[in-house]
Each structure stands twice: as structure tokens, then as C-alpha cells.
Length: 205
Image (cartoon, rainbow, N blue to C red; front, side, top):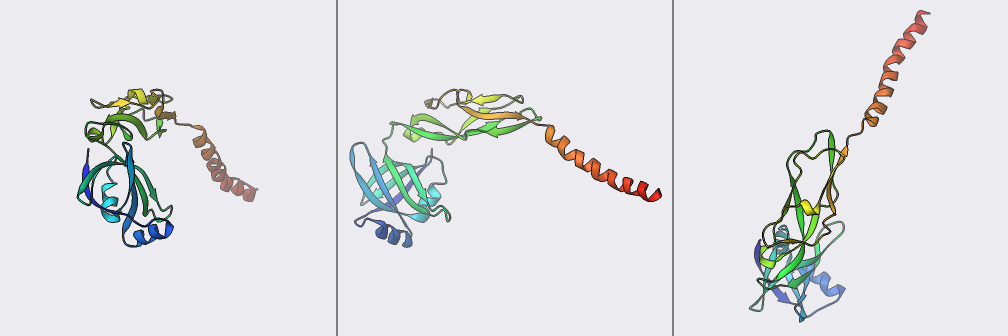
């Protein structure tokens, strides 16, 4: 579980205009809440925050006027086109405390080559200690046959991590490769190939 230290600055201005000015200055407006504490309105350096958020479920040690708060990103807002960070909500966590988060699912193993693997759900929801959140969890698809699925209950979870998602939730499905499309494409090719021969017969006649 990655932890990143970053310096925050208390916000005294609010509203769209203030948020816009902060972003122009290379800062991201943020709110820290949780544990019954009064929400903290701060700004964080956009570049450092962007690098930190590349890590799934990264813990942020935010230094605000000399006081360090351990936080977990809860909601990240980006510009729909530019993908620039516009706002982030962070929740306070304590070491040893259990939190519920979404974790990426990676697959390993070889499935039936006659099937097409479809990723129905890319993440599952788990409960884990705040400082021991897995970067990802693994689902074994070795020997998976066409027409079958693998479920959340089959994902391998590390010690201390429990499944919150529905155990029957489908993670991947191996679809049967259809031959109908191949036959449909092949038919016109045969017709086109026969056309020159038919024209030649007409000329000979």
C-alpha cells in the first residue's frame, strides 16, 4: 500500500471563481472529512497530486499548517475533455482502521483459445485495513472454457481482506466465438470471385 506525503494549504475563499483561480495557480481544491470532524477545505499542488493518484487507493499524508492528516481519496473530479484535476474529496482514516474500497481485478492463466474473454467488472469492493489495501487482486482463469464465467467469490484475497461485493457478481465471461460472421463474410468473396468467370463465359458465347 503506497503512502505519499503532500503539503496542503487551508482555503479561505470559496465558490466557482475561487476554485478557478486556484486551478490557474496550479492547485486543486479539496475537502477532507470523516470521523465526525469539521470538514477541512484546502488546496493541493496539482502536479504532485496527479502523480500520487496514479497509484490505486493511495494514502495521502497531508501536512496542513504543521498538522499531518492521513487520508484516502474518495471522489476525484476531472475535466471531461482535458482530464485536468478539478476537485477531490478525501476521507480521514486511522492506522488499523478498516475501510471499504474498490480494488482492480487482474486475471492470470490461459483460457480456451476458442473463446473471447469479456471483462464484465474490472473492480470488486473489499474491506481492508487502511494501511494494507491491496493494489489489486487476482482471478485465476486457467482452463476456463467457452460459455462459462468467473465470479467475485473466486477472486483470491490477501489475508485480512474480505469481500464486500456480491459473491455472485460476474467478473469475466468467456464468450463462444461465433462462426456465423465468418461464413457471412466468406459468401460475398466467393460471389465476387465467380463474377469474372461468368463474364468470360458470356464473351465466349
